[in-house]
Amino acid sequence: MQTLTKNQTLIEINQLNLFYGAFHALKNVSLRIPEKAITAFIGPSGCGKSTLLRTLNRMNDMIPGTRIEGGIAISGTDIYSGDVDVETLRKKVGMVFQQPNPFPKSIYDNIAYGPRLHGIHDRKKLDEIVETSLRSAVLWEEVKDYLKRSAFSLSGGQQQRLCIARALAVNPDILLMDEATSALDPISTLKIEELAQELKDRYTIVMVTHNMHQAARVSNQTVFFLNGEVVEYDETEKLFSNPTDQRTEDYISGRFG
Amino acid sequence: MPNEALSTNSSKQLVDAAKRNHAFRNEKSHLMDKIMPVALFLCAALSIATTIGIVATLIGETYHFFEQVPFVDFITGTKWSPLIEPKSFGIWPLICGTLLITVIACLVAVPLGLASAIYLSEYAPKKVRNIVKPILEILAGVPTIVYGYFALSFITPMVRGIFADAGVFNALSAGIVVGIMIIPMVCSLSEDAMTAVPRSLRDGAYALGATRFEVALKIVVPAAFSGIVASAVLAFSRAIGETMIVTVAAGSTPKLTANPLESIQTMTAYIVQVSLGDTPHGSVEYGTIFAVGMTLFVITFLLNILAQYVARRFREEY
Ligand SMILES: Nc1ncnc2c1ncn2[C@@H]1O[C@H](COP(=O)(O)OP(=O)(O)O)[C@@H](O)[C@H]1O
Ligand SMILES: [Mg+2]
Image (cartoon, rainbow over all chains, first blue to last red; front, side):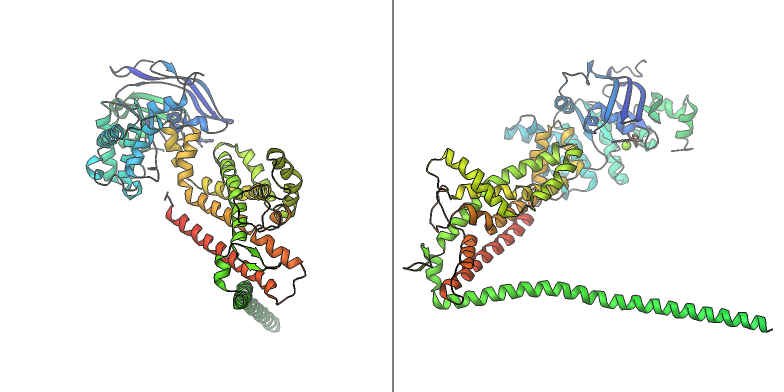
């Protein structure tokens, strides 16, 4: 399969099969995800979008009974090979979840948590990371005077941007977002979408959304899934204006899902 | 038409009967509705009344005791020998013995209980947890006298093997075994607090590259901290109140000492000693057990308040 854009391939998924026990959740998935762009996964609920996303930072490892066949390479390294350190992988592949999940700590400590995990304890350095990360997540101006306050004092949208900042603080290459706006109001959603647009110049973003308008608005390329299979993968504009597969057309015209 | 009349008649009867039946059932359920709250209230009232009765007796007898022995002597004295001349009623040796046991027990129970709780909630496969949790609850139900003899016949020889100058009865053996006895409680309560920490917090930390150990220590334990502290304080008051193990294994020598290898006496063990002896009822000697019991009650009561305060103070909201 060829790359869709001039951007280089960062993530290469090759004949991936995933089983939850006996349940075959991903079927022969092959994809090339380009760097420094936004790739959206769309498809009806239960089609395997989150599952595929979680294979990219190996969060599926923690679900008992999960079995995987095939391979995923990031920058040419097979992330499922024995000598890959999962913690280092997850540092490079950040993740933002559906529900904002700040730690029950201060805003500052939420951001500093990751850097501290990876051995940074110098106060000045941490201050710097906290500020840069919050600026990157366009949250700095709103919270700079309240860094000691509990993260729970923030609104839902702010909490989600805090979670994005927290992920950015460990300096990842890739940012995975699993329906990161589905629990938010329209204005917060818009802010996160704008943020994603800004971040894509520096990070490779893979976002799951079951809102195809969001995929159409935000992403550069879109993958349409159905029952654990890739039905169609194309540039977003093309996929939405001129899909090649009948099922894609049915889905984007709202005939099911 | 007679036939029709008959049938209307009988159907009317049927309806009446049904109505009566219905009314009767209604009445019955109303009756139950009226009786049940009263009955349940009486049950609740009974247990409250019992508690009030116990406390009242304790206060009355303690008051009576302090009419004969000055309160200041009791609360400041450092020698406890109410049964042997020259008599002396200083409570501190008993408090000291109790604290010695309690501190040793907590040093054993809190780290081990917490470690096993972390294992169960963060590491153990579901199957293991489903087997271990009920076992813990069974362990918590073993009669403490069994632990007492376990202390005397198993731990004490070991302690004496390591520390040559340890007595047959010593605070260390008893303290260790009290600790072992309360491990299941600490473990079970802490584990409950840790499993209550939402999955999403753990995921957030894992996604940043945290190891299991880091998630347990830096996310789960802080988030469950109030529950963990509550379990530790509960362990503390459980150790203070423990009676059989210390009666069997710690000795009966009230002593103001911090040396765990010596024989000591706790407040509870003293109460047992007097209750079993031939001290005449109503005497000053007999009154001591109420004064000691009152002291125990006050300490445990304060601890419970402390536990509630700490649990509230350190709550990390999630
Ligand atoms: N932990 C799990 N154990 C078993 N089956 C699962 C698990 N997680 C997801 N599944 C199943 O895998 C399929 C894909 O789920 P998911 O990736 O969450 O879908 P999506 O994110 O597209 O809604 C669904 O049928 C779901 O029921
Ligand atoms: Mg999903």
